[in-house]
Image (cartoon, rainbow over all chains, first blue to last red; front, top):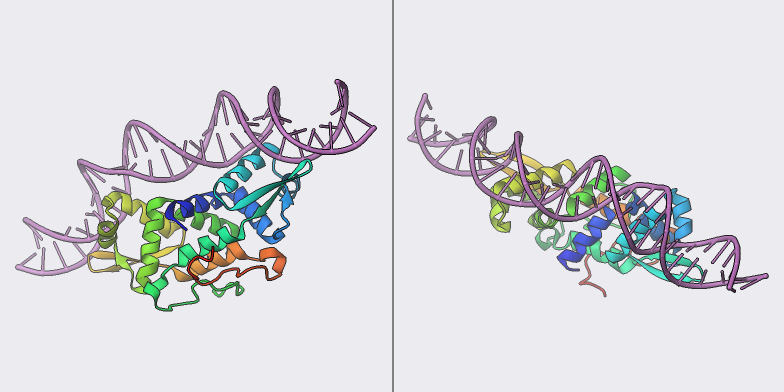
Length: 109
Length: 109
DNA sequence: TCTATATTTCCAGTATCATCGAAATATAGA
DNA sequence: TCTATATTTCGATGATACTGGAAATATAGA
């Protein structure tokens, strides 16, 4: 992942509604969710949601496919993992310092 | 990690110079780096860097300690891991779908 | 106290972003 | 073709962010 891609992805996620959309899609898995369903789940006006979906798509974090009259969005898991890897890259100069990217561990405080 | 914390962290990282600072500190490890050294490494004016360091600190991503005349900044690795966990939380509804947060694997395309 | 070093705060100018109603577009079925 | 559903584009407004020089603050040593 290149710097600019990472900035685009982080910028896309750094917004209340977009972060909620992305997390919803991450949890929904590869099947994704229709725009209308997302709007209903998050209680967002259609035009606002559309703006945010476009933003996330431009950033490469989600993808779109049409299914009849609905547009289905799903998280791009490769992009997600790429971003995570980018942030933790060469952590502590390569020396294993800490669980660089621990798969959820119930908030190790 | 709460929603607002994640948004603050993502927003802090969604900027060219701040992302560079954070990655530099991640790679520097717990010893951290003095503000002046960071400015030199990234070729940034002191006032701009100070602005970005304050932003990252406010977001909880880095910490500050004084050492004589220098202020040493270091990455907060717990916060970093918390953010990563937050993004990948309940990925695919809990079903193991993909390496949710694979420790760097040389960009599995 | 005086001087040098390290860093931050202040400020103004410019640019970018979020919001959401209304209108436009795309698809489907009768 | 006509109507209904699903979603996007347009547009104006208000808010927030980045930049970097100059001045202020903090620490150290002689």
